[in-house]
Image (tube, rainbow, N blue to C red):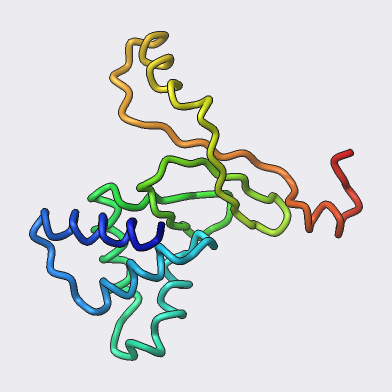
Length: 148
C-alpha cells in the first residue's frame, strides 16, 4: 500500500514538472510511513540527522507544495501546531481530547455527503473534512472513563 502511494505521489510530482530532491523524497517517504499525523517540526526533527543542512523552512516549503498539489491535507485539531496527513485515500480522523492522539478511520457511508450538501444548499461542493473528538482507549483507562 505505501509503495503504491509513493509511486502515485512521484508520478503526480513528475507530471507537474517538480524536481525530486533527496530532502523532498525523504519528507514524502516519512509522511507516507507516518501514522502520527506529524507537524513540520516533528518531520524536521526526524530527518535532521540524515540531512543536517536541511532547515525547518525546507520542510514547510515542501509541505506547502504537497498541500497545493492535493497530496496532503492540513489538520488543525485543537492544539497550537498544524498536523499533516496524506490525502490520497479518503478518510476521517478521531482525535483524543486528552492526549491529542489522532487515528484514521474510513466510513463509506459519508461518500455521498458532498452530493447531499450540494443538493440541499446549492453549493458547488469541492470537498469535506471530518474529525470526531473524544477520549482514546488509553486515556479512558487512565482517567477511569470507560465507554461501557
